[in-house]
Length: 156
Image (tube, rainbow, N blue to C red):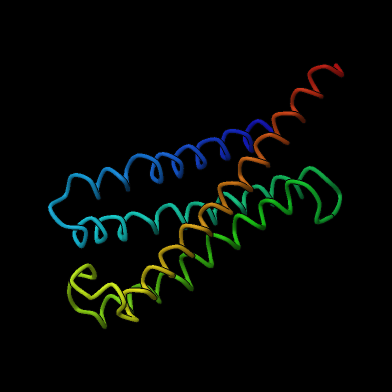
């Protein structure tokens, strides 16, 4: 239980720090949005792959603590973290990469009404949304885990 809490807290903290501090700072201080996007694009796989590992660990820990898989509570939230991170990394990420290669230049140089620029914006939003889903699932799992520890402490 304590390991589960620590793993969730660590990943959630890292993902939140990336989303709230790292990515916005890169876009604010680097000379071009293209360069900032390149750096963010290289860092995001670490967030997504580690999220998949964390979700799997949650499932393993939960199943290991019971006789059988039940698809309830934190097991389901761990699966949601895996799915959300996998979709963002393995489905949305490659689409963004293909689109960037097709554009072969700064996205901001395209007209605002260009279909490729609008598609990039949509894919970027979808990627952020999946990260948000994974982070929300992690928050809920973290709260449930903490409440479980508190209940055990009170019951003893």
